[in-house]
Image (tube, rainbow, N blue to C red):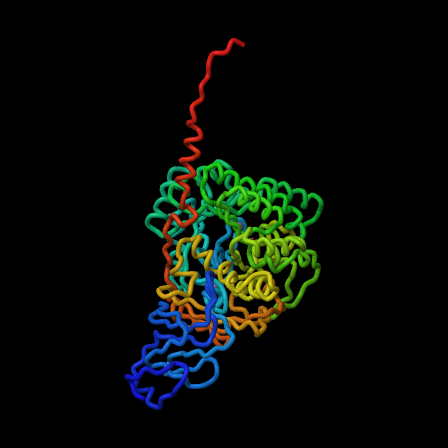
Length: 547
Ligand code: URP
Ligand code: ZN
Ligand code: ZN
């Protein structure tokens, strides 16, 4: 045995290992099941310089030695995993988070510093995309949502680009459209053609702040279509929500329950239907973010049955929670500090719904009516939430989820038997990557793909608690929740970033993932347009009638 010998990575050990020149950029993972959306197979994964080089059974690689029977044997900085029964899954893509969002309606920056992103995203769990700001972090798997600055997309992009510089995860951006004029239209083109943005979000709620009307939706959808960019909507009827809020205040209902009561599922269903029909009228694909209710699912299902290209994204909170907490009157003392009002933590939009909606969202996901799971991670601490102590309208909207998503989806969907392990990869990773046009660089464990991999042990359970989470908030909406399936190791871009319950991220190591327009969702749109046009041009013959 010597420095030039090929050793079976699974057997043999070598006293002269130290003579071998090793680079820390190589990783061999052995002894588990590699899960992709298209199949699962017992295989090893070999990584070099951040890229997956081989996925095959019994990979033998020079310089790797098996040094013990336990997980995680290190040889001169080279990790070799010997796992049995573990699943190697694609490191996931969290499509919609607001790790660093300034939500103007609420005049608060979301909280999620370096650690959040890192672990949330990197860490055990979530998306590949994450960026870190000074004291706030933004993450969005395929994008964090970039807010325009004074209506300028270019200025908004600059702000978020800067904030993302310290990201420890690969990240991308979606961009929010808040108004319509020629400048915005031209800037959208610049964002797509020069900045790597291929999706735009339109808010149908947050009246007077972010909300756009149908005219903006139509103009925006048309522009998205011409650019090959995906239109996304926050679907709630903002005018009606405004009315509902006034009604609650008049009735003297000022607590968090007023939030839920002021914007019932009905209003989510209406806006979802409207957005879908307008996108259908324009003939452009539509992505409905944070689908929270049966009402919205029914609209999506109806449209998909007619063949319309509509993507529905439930979020971890929608699958895992119901509204019972919102009526909770009590203060609780959280892990880290001051007593907090638990009920305030659950305030997000669209609201977390009554029990029953959660099960329906799960079922829709398991049957393909909904396609993928995001988080809408938008986390505030209890002090920020308490700004709405006298008026629910002032409670910053948003819940956490980025760090918890992979665990929750495993437990709720796979452990319960509702979906297969391959579908787990599809709804947490692969479909996201396809929709945002970064597949198979992301979303697959294939030769040539980025080495973003989690090692998940299905037999270990995890407890979610603010005591051990990694984002900066003092509280967690899943506090105390136990579930099966633990992410034991996370490799991001060929780096081990989570191992032994420890976060090992390198700020600034995350790369910006530019996303090309015209994903598969646009394939064939031109043919449908041509068909529509030819149907309009069918000759109509009229003769003068004598009536
Ligand atoms: O409550 C939520 N979802 N907060 C983030 C802003 C939004 O509506 O996406
Ligand atoms: Zn984070
Ligand atoms: Zn939203």
